[in-house]
Amino acid sequence: MRSFTRKIGTALFGAVGLLNLAPGLVALLPSRLDTYGVVAADATSTLLLRHRAVMLALLGAALLAAAVVPNLRMPVLAGAAIGKVSFILLVFTGSGVHPNLTPVALADVGALVALAVAGVITIRTRVRPSLVIARKHKEDARLVPE
Image (cartoon, rainbow, N blue to C red; front, side, top):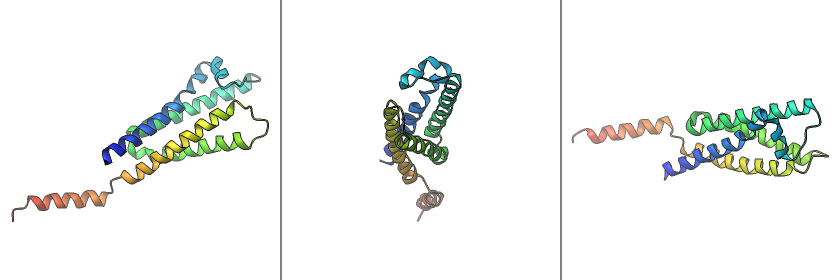
């Protein structure tokens, strides 16, 4: 059961990582900005949106790394959660926000829920060093003839 749960945690980190990696295409192909339904007003806005795409791709890469390196999970999860919560708050509390950003913010809500579940799994399935030592001593005790 514990192994299955760990696989779910790994899959959640991977899925959210891929979700964040996808916007990285905007950095390479600014013509893809229209996928958000928002048109950059000028070259500076385009540059800022492309930079945002690079940052999201980096977060996606970090989440994918955390999927396979459990020691990275909590710090990467913290950074991802801060980024997602800030975007969600900005979209839903801002005035004059383009309505096409609502689905993006809702996707971040879903990603945040997935990360919360992955975080709980990470904490609950973490093997404590004291348990590893206790198990080792228990195994050693069975090897000693009576």
